Length: 136
Image (cartoon, rainbow, N blue to C red; front, side):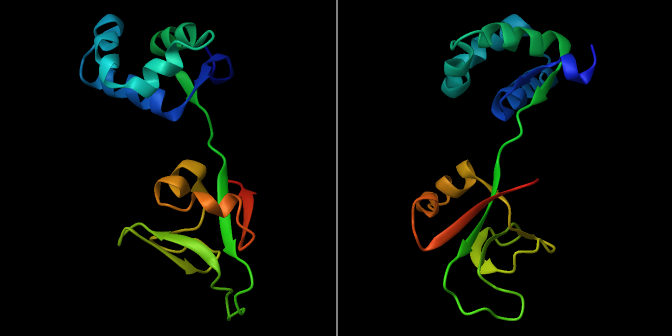
């Protein structure tokens, strides 16, 4: 099967399959562990996702690409490099406004889930912020 023919599944489901296989689980024993993974179990029981899960297990899979966003604080005085973009400092595990360029440990492209889990879900509806979809 070539890469285009593989099923596309959410990242979390792919991680579950990869983790189960790494632990030496087979398809059926991995199903027992779904009781601890409610979000994945809910996905499997929707539509034809059970078939996709089986196909992903047997044949491999592609992971859905998550939409990435850059968040800019509107109205800040422009400095030399425009330090008005929301950054995540991976090394320090902190959020701050810096340049729009990803340099070193600073990440400027975020998923909706990352933003929401960090308490920034309101950027999508607030007039104080400009949110742009960007390429990974």
